[in-house]
Structures are given as C-alpha cells and as structure tokens.
Length: 503
Image 1: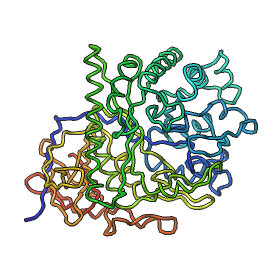
Image 2: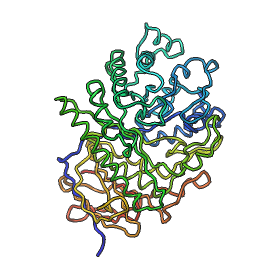
Image 3: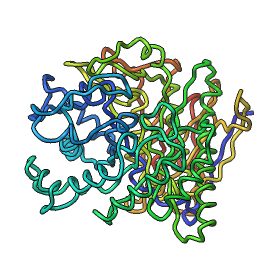
Image 4: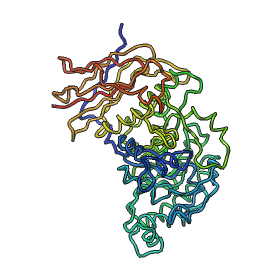
C-alpha cells in the first residue's frame, strides 16, 4: 500500500497574516559576516563603499525584509560610537565575545547604507551587557531624531542629514546566558530592559521593541525567564525573542528531521507564558514573538575551537550545509508559518559566511548554500495569509520524538496575486509519499509549478567549485485532478513548493 498524505485547507479558516519580517536575517560582527562577507573593499565586485556587489545580488534574491545588527553576543560589549564618524579615527578594540580584533571599519551608518542597497530594513540591537539606558537613549537620538540636539547634529556632521528612522530595536541579546558579557538574572534584565524601553520610546514613540527571551529551549531557566521578564516589561515592549539551533551530531537523520517539532513546542510554550502574563495583568495587549535567531548549526563547532584569538575576521562558524540541513530549514520555516498569528518576526542566523545561506571566498566567488533555496522560496512565495492546515500523514518515532509526521506542510494564500502556495517536506528517507491537496473552497484553479529540492546524497553540499551541486528543479508532478483536488508524489527526503493560481 502506497504511503499517502492529505491536506485540506479552506480560505475562510486562517492562522493569521504573514508579517514579511518573518523572513528576516542577521549580520553580526562575527567571523567573516561583515569583513569578507558583505564588505570587502579589495574585491573586484566592491562598490564605492567597499560592499560586495555579488553578495548584494544574492541577498536581493532572498527578498530579505529586515536584518538584525550588530549582534548577537558581540553587541553586549560594543560601543556604538566606535563605529561612526571618520573611519581613520575609529579605534581597534579587543572583541571579547568571539575573541577577535574589531577594526570598526563598518558601523551603524554604513550598515544602514548597505540595507538600502539590499532593499531591506535594519533591526538594531542595543548593548545591555556593559552599557544601559543612557547609551541606548543616545543611539536612538543619533539614529531617529531629525536635528537640533547633540546626537542628531553629530549624525548630520557625519554626513547623514536625514534621520535613519530605524523602527525595530532589540533590548540586548541572550542576557540569560553565562557566556554573555554582562549576563543578568531575569529580574536584573527585566528592570534595565524596561527602563531602557521607556526612555527609547520617549525619544521616538513610533518604535517597536523586542525583549530578550531565553537563549534556547534547553536553558534551565526557561520559561520562568520569560514570565519574569514580561512581568517587568509588559507595558513597554512589543515582542519577546526566541533563539534555537539544531544539529545532527549523532548522525541520526530521522531524529534530526524531527527536531522542528521541538521548535513547535518552544513557540507554543512562549505564547502560553506571554498569555499567562497578559491574564495576570488583565491586559488587552498581546505580546508577539520574534524568533530572531534560528538555523542549523553544528558542523563548524570543532574547527572553531582551533582558531587562534585576536585576529581580524577569522573563518568562524562557517557551517557547510548539506541537503539534509536544507530539509530541516524547510521544516523550521513551516513551523514559523504555522504560528504566523503570533510569530511576527524571525531571523535566520546568519546571512553571509557565518552559519549562512550565502558563502564567499575572500577575493573570489560567492555562492548559494543548500539552505538558500527553502529560505528563498518561503520569502518569495510565502507572503499573504496562512491557512489552517488539516494534515493527515503516516508517522514515525525517532530517538527524541514520537508521532512525527512523514509529511510536514503548510499553505499560504496570497489574495493580492490570486495564488496559493503549499510548502511541504517529506521526511521519509526511503519512500516517496502520495500527497493530496484539497482546495475546493477556492473554486477553479490550476497548478503554476511544482518546485522540488531533492538529492540522493543527504550529505551533498554546494562549494565554490561546484555551486550547483544541490539546487531545485521544476519537474514536480503536482497536477489538478477531475475531482478538484491536486495530487502529486513527494520524493523521499525532499522539499516541495507547489504554486497554485486561482481562476
């Protein structure tokens, strides 16, 4: 008997609107993300500011709506003033989070310039590790106040007459982590985050603010951290952050592909905790989620331990991604979409070279890693309204998870374009699965295309020498049946994008 899965969606049963910022990314002053990644003045493709045009083109292909900056762990020891003004006057600093030298050749203003070139917005983080309320107040005045004050006039002196008007701000980074510079208890962090949020809003009432949630699902203080932090910040913040990375250290692919179920649980627990605080405060306001660090990360752990400290832009966290990693990234994207009612922002970490969909050689090529493709497909085609997925699939048990559906799927309705896009992963490593999609509530429609990312080698990667070793094709078999359903076969270990045009 053939393996069979079925999904029913109805245009009137919706999860929520997709906030485009759910497809955000992240650039930290870490490894070669900045120097040798987005910025390399000596590169043949470099523009007048030193930004790599070849990288910019790959970023534009992802349609990235927002990019978090400058960290990450880096921000907790960062003096933002080091990165503005004449480059020749900027100091070199010992960067303690990653034990490198930070030359400060790229800073806030340059990053905002890069964002404009990349057709994206900036999500800025403030330092609540070694610094606090005053420096955050000064930075937002420098960034967003028009003129007539010390910090806004200094921005104008630095060559930026118009304010940057950055609207999304993170209140520190992973402040629960003992690895963090200036780590804090939940009460310590909640107090300083609240005071910082209050003052930043006094400077610019139009901003949105993200409070630090737990650094990972496995933190011993999760979810008490969220409950305490939100209790102290509820009225002055808009989002609570989540961070989670997955890996396959045990070479157990079936378990690896199931790990997005842990992501589902993480998201639901944070929503429940936020709603508990809402109930406790008798509030009408919802706190939404910013999943502002997520990805696969484990390949580079061993090599990172061998890097000598105090160099500039060493090759840190340079995971080379496999086909199976791309499937997990696809599952994680589906997890984010399934809770689009509350997950309003998310950042794949990171964008270039550092656990990233885009890789570069210093002075040489730039190419797409395997994970580039599901991220690109979701960002380009996953805009609109997420529909409630009623999904039936055969299931399996793995080492850490039970009742794992072989087929994971979600559908997004783009009313403006008159399209529905179905994203589906077949987790089965041995067998294809027949897949039926019931869209009868939409009336007449046709299949535009069925994109498939598949490879017989789960460990296949893309490299500078072979950049197209793993790439999608459009030979999927989805077709409209006479009974008004769409039927197809999802190949073993495959990522699928089925685009449907409504008539």
